[in-house]
Length: 434
Image 1 (cartoon, rainbow, N blue to C red):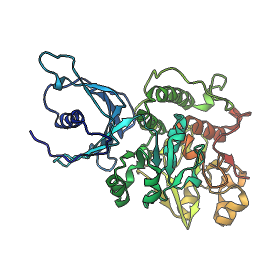
Image 2: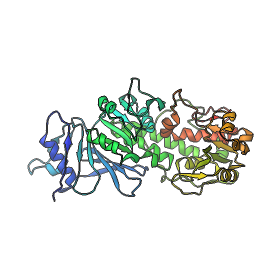
Image 3: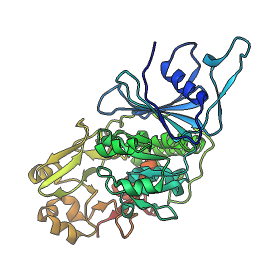
């Protein structure tokens, strides 16, 4: 079986062994080597230890079961053991792998390209604030040399970075001058001509689809995907293990639990465990509680339309897990639901709590749309925004640290829903509209 491929490799010197490794890995013939897949509840990535490397697969959210991209992560200077290269008298032979800048292989089939990446990464570019949150949590934020609109980012590197503009219109000159090892890009740009230009320029594009994960814990799992490119999966496991434990503890109905044992009471530093002990349930938010739970509403009017999350979206799951009654909890639309002002009033006129308002003051909220004053939550003053951690240029840590730590968002929401249970709590990401 022959596989045609085109491999563009930036090397200081060529290696016949490296090319043989590429051919053998893609051909998939001969004796199979044991593969170990690491458990993950995220739907759109898989990490597998194979042939002494880590294989990182990104699945296409728009085409179920289809591979969007495959990356082989190769430790610099590592020696890869491959039984398919063994001779009869050299049972444990090994093959050197030289560190290329990238090797993009295009099989003759219609499968997605395969990219070989030397790790750990040292210089990266990114198009999303969410990616910055992952990098910050892993302690590798200073590896960022270029990003889209750095003024909109809350956690910034200690040095100046190149501004590569919008992710749908990447400025190529500053990107190339910054010389990144890779570009982290959101998967919705997979068919972008700009992204194609980046790849053609020899910069490997690493797609992330965390924004498509429905459950907050599944979205946080992408920390492990990013960590693999820096050789920091142990750290990611520690962080995620504590995040899952705290989140699941907070999922217990607030009205029936005490906070004395909560590791996140108050908001101090969090001690990280040494390892992961359990994997949380499938990435679907748990059933709504209903009953006497306080009701919640979300968003605000924008040019005459009110967009609200469905029950299975990221925010919809947080509402349920926080113990709120939500009008659209049973809606399964994968995205926002557009409402007219009349529909919003019918759905939320008597809601107890309003979160995600696009204003910091009641006067500002009324100025946006006079109809906002018709809601019970406005009249009782239980209106909250997600601007608790922002900077003067528009960066919002809710979209960075919040993605890695949904348990903090959950706790903030429960503070707004059940204030009597949190008399001394200081919210982290949300704040009351004054």
